[in-house]
Amino acid sequence: MDTIAAIATGNVIAAIGIIRSSGDDAITIADKVFRTKSVKSLTECEDRKLYYGELLNTEGNIIDRCLCTVSHAPHSYTGENTVEFQCHGSPVVLGEGLRSLFKAGARQAEAGEFTKRAFLNRRMDLTQAEAVIDLIDAETPLAAENAVGQLGRAIGRKTDKIYDDLVGMISHFQAVIDYPDEDIDEFEMVRYTGLLNEAESTLDRLLKTFDRGRIMREGVPSAIIGKPNTGKSSLLNALLGYDRAIVTSIAGTTRDTIEEKATIGGVVLRLSDTAGLRETDDTVEKMGVTRAMEAAKTARLVIAVLDSSRTLTSEDEEAINTAKNAEYSICIINKEDICPEPVFEIPEGFDAVCHISAKTGEGLDSLTEAVKRLFGSDTSLPPGEILTNTRQAEAVSRALDAISSARDAMELGMTPDAVLSIVENCCAALGELTGRSVKDDIVSSIFSRFCVGK
View 1 (tube, rainbow, N blue to C red):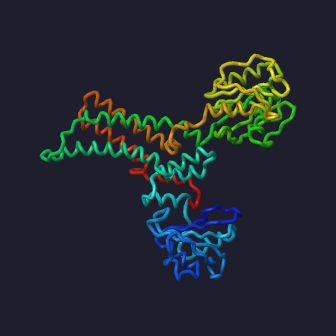
View 2 (cartoon, rainbow, N blue to C red; view 1 turned 45 degrees about the horizontal axis):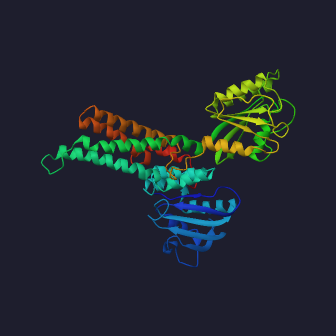
């Protein structure tokens, strides 16, 4: 394949910057722009050994004194000849080095092309490739741990066994049909009942991890609602650890929806601080209230904030009812520092009720525990065995539907060829999951998520 090159560390000033190149001619191209006294040519370099030398520009002038490492195919990330230059992290230096490689015969790598080549060269399957971007994007230790597990083929190993067992069953039937005179064990569909049941059970357990995986990867869409001056913005600031929202005693200070991420109890909450719920003639504030209700309708978690020192009003009741209609709801009894005992009866029907002071931070640990209880990952699941994206979940779902249909067909007494035609649909879905058989447009969609240089 042709040789690609890219800056792998982004266009930022840093101590170290890396230029990466991969392809059939990567080493000979790099040899034109790098010189070292250790060897006469980079083609003589030992695999994965650092060589100190000079990186040259298109005129042959020194750009940087840096380190170079060479990996010969197939023992590299992409499975091709690869070269990496570890330079001083100046964007100017890296840009000049990249231009030198282009002048010598390389071309600009596309987004995700290095990992795409690793997949095409069978250095990794699709679940491993997706784990690479999940690891880069991980926002919690648990998300990183699961991505590392998937990078080690945790999902692939589990589904490969099912795939191989089902292919073996299909092959047995075909062999009996095609070679009736050979000494092959008679095909009896009932002998494979246990195999189908085990496959169905395994796929069902795997699919049930998707909700946790989606939370782990994307976070929980959450809305903070309540009437003005209950402490919504103070709560947001307390959770973020800095003053993101303006806090005043003036009702209607927050007029638009403020969105931020906060990690609470190891769970990423995509928080929306919304305008206070109240009747108003202010056009802008009225739009903010409308957006607040829209945010609450689309959120999985709605946090209703009540002021413990004030009796409940119709606006409070609206916030309470809106929160309880959400998939998950938490009631915050705020201002415990000035009124430890609420002047109203605590509403029922919430998944959790937390007494806090957003101003002092008192009681925030109870909110942390509530979030962990509602959304925390199942620690009994081995790292890597949690589905983290819709593509994976859809493939497993189709495989599960097919295997369940095949088992039902077998119980109804349908002929083996009819049952096995359904089993083939399961194999096709599992093949799509790991990339054994997958359409080009799906591959392109997956790697478009990557940054250039990975």
